[in-house]
Image 1: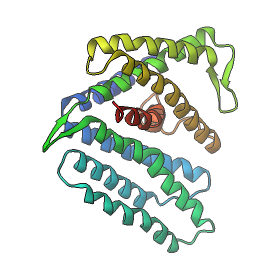
Image 2 (image 1 turned 45 degrees about the vertical axis):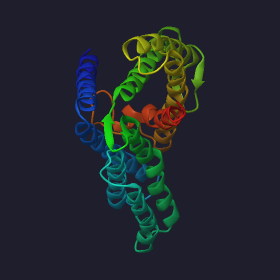
Image 3 (image 1 turned 90 degrees about the vertical axis):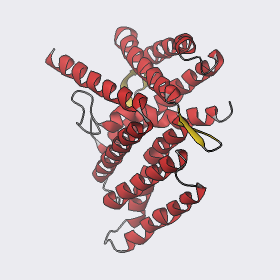
Image 4 (image 1 turned 180 degrees about the horizontal axis):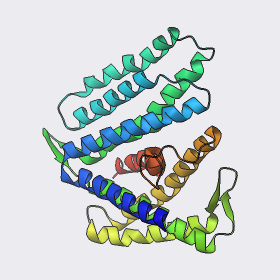
Length: 272
């Protein structure tokens, strides 16, 4: 009972901070996700250490922070597209740094450093372009779709868990995540798809069919994101990516579905 209460309180505080940071202003959005992204990167590097890799943690963290900031500055129209040219030397320096480190597997270290940019920094950077819209020289902050993506992910996770513990018999992917079941995944997916009706009512910025497709993207991509993080943790022989949020694990645990779903949602939005 104590663990349930602790988990509920910490989860509620986390949700309030997240929603407030997104909804209040574009600068609170930046500070919030700059922090979350940085903590997630650091957790990933700690996990990779358990797999006998030695990524360039300090440089990788600084470079990822700069890349995220570059994307925000461009999205908010403070700089032009030439700013992205600075990302090239940031990435190439990873190779140069490894020359000065005495390690038998330098390219393993380089690979994990680069993987953090693709796996974590890229999805978080896309958020800047998802919430900031340019019209001539004016920039408008529109966080509604981002908030709805979180709502869909939380809906799917919650109902997949409830259906799973009550009806789950057939394992979804027992080799990677033995607790997940097909019954939970299907039940969670159905409730998430039905949530499209609520979204089109409260957020009519998109048509029903658009919300329905985004819901489908969240379900499929989010499931794979969860499984991929489980695979990462299983290889490292750990239960949670961290202990930052009592009862919920670390940042990577909380955003595993999110960072995999965001790129696909972003791509879909470009065709609307």
